[in-house]
Length: 134
Image 1 (cartoon, rainbow, N blue to C red):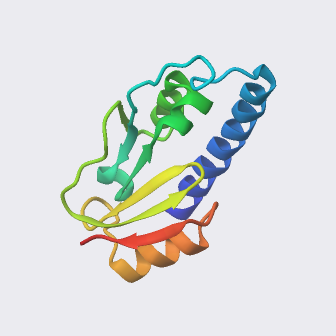
Image 2 (cartoon, rainbow, N blue to C red):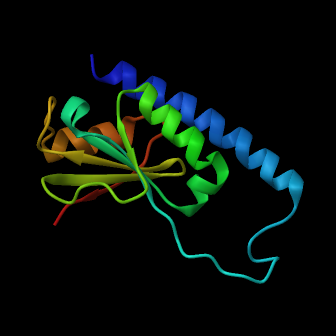
């Protein structure tokens, strides 16, 4: 069943990000406070072949959870972790939430159509903001 692994992944990740954010807020230091600006980072957990999705993480997610933790979580769900964006081909749409962006594909083990992907986004844990692919 596809819903159960995704829900578990979302709950574990969301909990870890909240914990990491609380710890970083206690420290009080930030990149902007130090005066320097860093180039933006992107990380991804590619599950297209097994679940027809890929999760993409921006700077704030990578900073909050850390690359190592994101890589371990991705490996735990049998994904391929990379410090780059998710594949562009065969996208159905994206689902943005505080924990990152879930990208749905019409390829892989459980291909999505736009209606199914949008419903999964809006009713998922956590629910996100749906944007259909061009």
